[in-house]
Image (cartoon, rainbow, N blue to C red; front, side, top):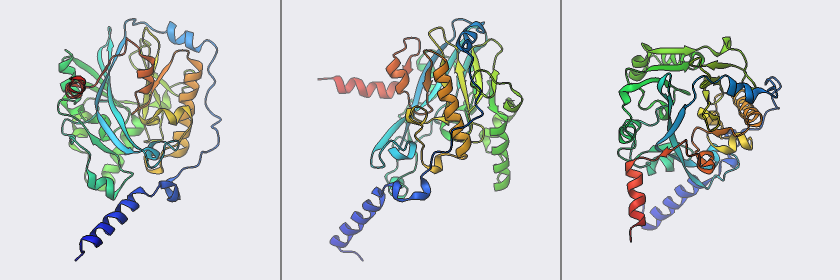
Amino acid sequence: MLNKYGFIVYLSLLSACAQVPSSIISSRLLAQPPTPKDIPSASRTFALELINRRQSPGVSLEVFVTGRVRTRGEVVSSLKSWHSKVALDVPAFLIKNPKEGLILFDTGLSSSTPRKANLLISLVDPAALQYEASAGQDLLSQLAENGVNSNEIRWILLSHLHEDHIGMVSAMPQAGVMVSREEWDRWKERWGQKGVGPPAWAQDIERRLKLVDFDSKPAFGPMVHAEDAFGDGSVYLTDLPGHTPGNMGALVALDGGPVLLTGDAAMVVDNYLDLALPLKPRIEDLSQYWRSLHIIRALSDSIPRLVVVPGHDLITLRIAQRPDIPIHEGKARKGRSRRKKSP
């Protein structure tokens, strides 16, 4: 049995192990592949064509921060230090289309998400992603708080099928769900291999599922495959795989300028802006992920005023300060902010 000094030494060693930078663990680091050669070149009139194809003016976008994901900086970007601890956004996006009605891009965290990260998990696996959310910060609570009836949601576009993007999808059973075929088929294959079958939420959405088969879709600008989701030029879906086999993004044509929602093709701005790679466990296919980053960069270069919104980093929207794109943090978080300002 350890005496008090032995226990202190044990805790110190445990803490030291947790602080070991991943740069020492070379198996978790990724080297940049060669520049992809198969990304289509955008014509000089691509941005104008994007505008001319719009048939539904007045499309708007709202952002709902449904919680936070905590991890070490280098986990999401090689430009960040292993010793830094970051708290990233977990957003869901509401698109209001005068023609198609209310559309969601991802649904954020579940209402059962823990209130705080688990200290023990961070000690055992310091590279783990840990999710936390305040009471009332889930998407349905925030929609109601902002006067949106969740029963009126017509479509849910899922970038991919990780838990922090599908947390509330079962809470809106009336809405159709769009997922890339590659994403859905690969997850079904994995559930079959494990012998457990699809989870309850997957069984729920299968009956209202519309699969987007990107392989059959043409290129549009630098997007290798693009699908005009509603046929009115308001939302273009594009395949941005690598983080998962079928991660998809959405290019939303707003009156104030277009916005690209990347899903986790880029988790933070560093990924596409500086081509800074996350750690290996965050990517399923490096070559596809690398190609997706270059597609995002090509879109940014070819569309003036495009705002690129990574999957867990709203800094670009906050810097842009677009009045047409409000960011909602949730009642609980706003309440804490008000208390801090009190004398």
